[in-house]
Image 1: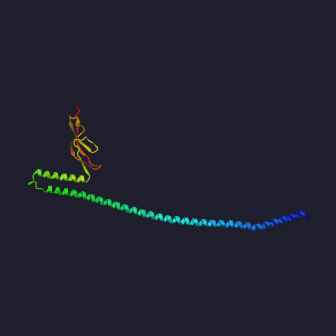
Image 2 (image 1 turned 60 degrees about the vertical axis):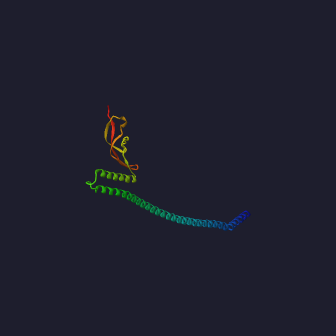
Image 3 (image 1 turned 30 degrees about the horizontal axis):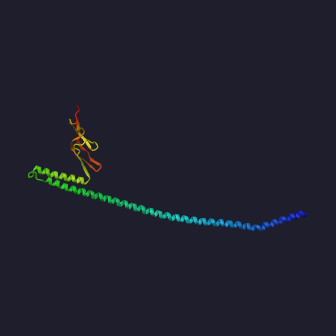
Length: 202
């Protein structure tokens, strides 16, 4: 073997020995990196599991709050309906109580002996009953419509006839009320039936 080949063989053996010495350290670093990665994954999984558990607990808590809220609203609505029904019944009872008194007056008038009572007395008695009945309607919020002398308004009047007149100032005004109208606040219960003045054409 010549001198150059001997030198090359020595370099190759030296390189191989160096790699063998270094390889355990390299593997040790790779294993350390791998172990670190596994540890991070495990830690991440632990955090994720904890977060999911927390969210589930919060969700259950919110569901309980929602169920309680629905139950409270249902009970509240039931109480309001009961109160409205009771108020309506009280209002109807108060209204009917007043009309019962009017009915009593009418019965007394109908039981009057016409042979021993003057017509004037009967008329006065009926007039008292009428005024009392009108008062009960007003207490219930019912307002009469008696538009005599007013300008005809088709919104709450019904023209039944026309009456000729020579006075232009009376044109279109109510000349007579055949039947009163009634309204409950803004609600029309019945129109007033009237006749209306009309100027004759020349």
